[in-house]
Length: 318
Image 1: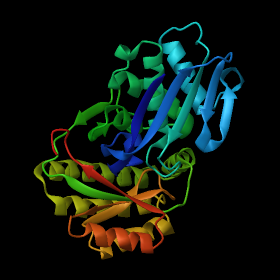
Image 2 (image 1 turned 45 degrees about the horizontal axis):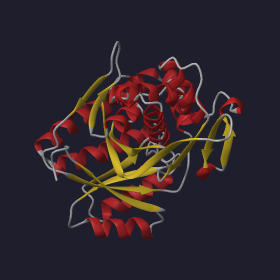
Image 3 (image 1 turned 180 degrees about the horizontal axis):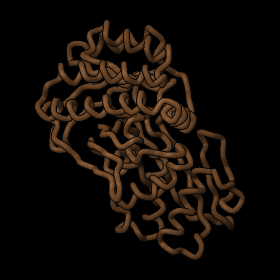
Image 4 (image 1 turned 60 degrees about the horizontal axis):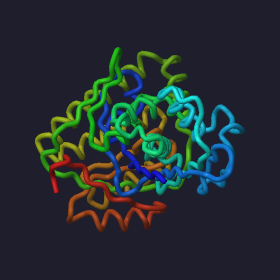
């Protein structure tokens, strides 16, 4: 048996604009994880099992858009494997689906690592290799993914990311002072692929307006990196509030998100914004040790389905 996990993720700055070449900042949410288990089977074939979704099928019978099957097909092609042995692949996740926490990327990355270990090829599965394969599967979920989700869940550390050719700019960076974040789930679900495509349609219809919005998000992401690297929590919070306003102008927020952002701010959060594709999913709020409890209670009282705690820090920090 081989088992692997991968974390959820939050985008701190730059969602949507990152698809158009502007910088973004994202971080793992290690408190919630996806898990993949690969086991030898005494039944013929490759069995794909996702109990959370009520899925149990054979690889040979799975359609082209089945994300779990896509993982196996990508691995098989990448390592030039003629056929898989008889086995079962089971994936489970603590990460809410369609909530902006990177559930699809985490499931894929965990499955890739577990498969490679089961096949005796774990040495090949570096973070860069896992990220590249996860990106290919992400295309099924997102249509035109930025590459940021697969990067964060594969490397499991905060990154400054710019989508560019011939190679994406991926820079882990120093967090001068750990940042305490709450991720509050609105309970509303949306399709990342549909929201991303709708933003593209609006950009095509109003290119000058949306280029200006994307530029604004890029400026905020750059400023946020400087603030994080210098430990200026107040500035990070102010920039989060500004980023949310730009996302509202892109029409990717929602009444649920806007309401909880206001609640978090009123409860003492230094800043709050939606995180991910939007029109549902999660918001994130920057809090301090003194304001965390009040902000959590206020968000839950206002209708948040759950509130997770995450801490943005460098690997060497406690």
